Image (cartoon, rainbow, N blue to C red; front, side):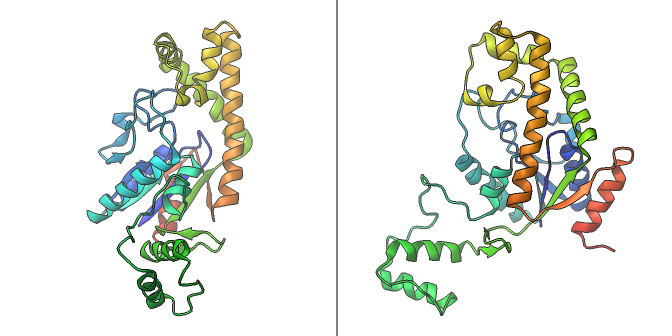
Length: 290
């Protein structure tokens, strides 16, 4: 079983993923584009070791912060990790707010630079055609269209299915979206930024700045790019922190748009006064309990 826990920044995905993983005997895979980087901890709100509660976590801290890690890289790494966890007969929880990572990993999402997953070079067109016909007797492709033959056979080998929106799914999954009202979410985002400052956000960013690290991750990651402007003397510290809060709120809005447009979401309103109640609701949903 694959469960995706997603939602806007600051909503409580990390806590939900750990508590749910303990209930369903699952391992956790990161789906946050910033948390793959080593030593980018505070601004990314990366889970701390003590918060993991002995649940295995994957694809956190796997890339040097100077490197450029692409969606295509994540697709390969996540699918490999999914297969490894499944081989141990464990359930899988994918947690994070980077919708494109989730889609690339679980859907038949192709990239221009991606070569075929399977090597068909030793098969003739006729062999390809007949192999497809075994699964799809109503095949509607010309035997001389090799590119289409290889593409169709790849889909069959990947056991792709439809999600009802015209998208092909490689790994069936339940997608859980955590949500709350806008005022509550924005308040949580603002307070989280203030907590990050207390935990050493400015020092973390200044260390990167002093080392002259200007990689894509740093210059696009919320929390670092705004503080770099402060270190450059372009804005005040107060202005930088307000920018972090504002950009985080705007990012949350974009996340909602992506999730609702791209996935068949199952939204759950978070009860912050009794988080266990929300965990119970999600657990009952994924286990089909009454």
